[in-house]
Length: 181
Image (tube, rainbow, N blue to C red; front, side):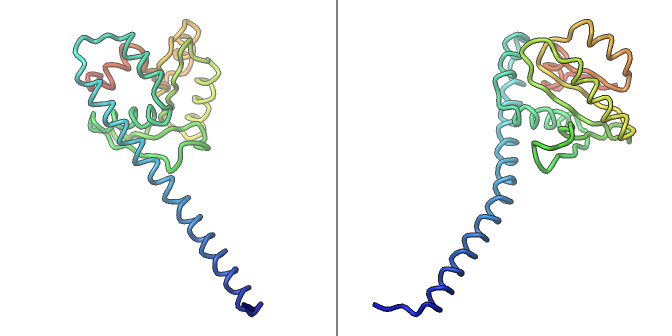
């Protein structure tokens, strides 16, 4: 069977255009789907941790250190939302300029940076986050699962606009028992 080269060329070009359109559509929808999926997982974890009454802090922190980092990010944002605050979500997880989200408290927008650490937190991360907050003329929450050493506590004194939430305060925050002042 002989196929006209002009028809064959148009057919291949059409297939390529359709493939390209599907690919572009899928990428946009993939990010949207991924955010919805991670938020759904975060809500499940929030409910699970909210039901724990023995307050085994070490177990809970260990559990939080093992979850997907993007789910942890969504869990923090969802926790702010459950406390009654307006939350602003990022459109993507990476390339966010060091900001994992924003929350509006008493008319002021605060930046959020969360980290899943196993050991002591890195002072440099807090310093960089502080620089981002200064550049945006606002304050921020640095929320983490690690240990806060003396050096970090001194950094927090140097940068009073950064609130660190970790350890028992992090557990209370996720369980809705944390007072943001």
